Amino acid sequence: MKRETIAVFDFDGTITQKDTLLLFIKYSKGIWSFIFGFMIFSPLIVAMKLRLYPNWKAKQHLFSFFFKGISLDKFNDFGNKFSAEIDKILRPKALETLKLHKKNGDSVVILSASIENWIKPWAEEVGADMVLATKIETNKKGLLTGKFLSKNCYGQEKVNRLLELFPDRNNYILIAYGDSPGDKEFIELSDKGYYNKFK
Image (cartoon, rainbow, N blue to C red):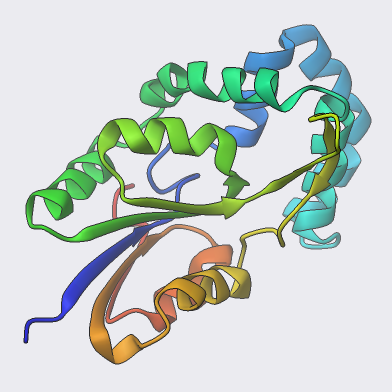
């Protein structure tokens, strides 16, 4: 029996040319709020880039500053409208490859450390089968707490999330596309792994 092929794409930097977290903040909060927040958190962002501070902690501080207390409905509305902005920063070869996998009957999964609420609307538009990304927490009133509900989907957590849904590696062929150190583990897990293929 022919094994199913699952094509897994990292999102930021692989499908897109830029990190979407900062773009989403700028889009939803406006340029002046973005600049103010960026000035406050720039030392933390630099420390994260230099790997002196955990990636997930820096992201959660930034996320909480901008979005704590906002309603989930409003946040999702921003996510839906943000799809048009994602279209502006796509890597054409990545989108071409994603669509080719779909044409060949492969399952397409987007695996990202970014927040699922702004990836899913775009992913549905291009026909991706699934998004595995960072989930956010809300309180009983439907307001964002500023915390992540799931572990930041980065590094080993990407492998964990994949194997949770597709546990038997002998039953499928895994093709992986990534661009950063956070993709190393799931690329190593794959049958065919591509690093920076679309740049």
